[in-house]
Image (cartoon, rainbow, N blue to C red):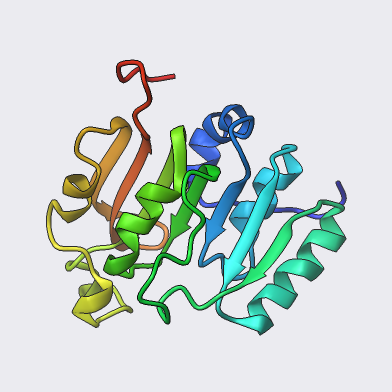
Length: 186
């Protein structure tokens, strides 16, 4: 692979969860932007679907995939336009979400994962405006909000606070959707 794909640190640390979960179904890189996270997983042999509302960013993702010599399905979709669930239920082995928040989509994300599917989610908290964008409270998590969304799930990693390089206020979770058996970490 002659082209560097640089995933977010959270995904880099937990990539093995997604390679293992890919036997359940493809991994969705939700609101993928230029696709760097999903394409990193595709380079690991994981079947990936990149979805975003922006045709320009999806074209960049397609170009990145070609340069990296990896395959990924491209899905242009406005996740916020529909009042119904835009995600296929019980379809994905994993979902990754970075720097995106649309609260009405959370139940859809939960339904979209198959049992034992893995989720990595990182986005900004209400402390973020002191460091930069975003400022709109609709795009900022309240303290403890993310952890309440996934109560009853197998929590593998949870962090809420300030991170460096660049300085930012985030909440992160890596978790597994419960299955028939009791919750077990990898």
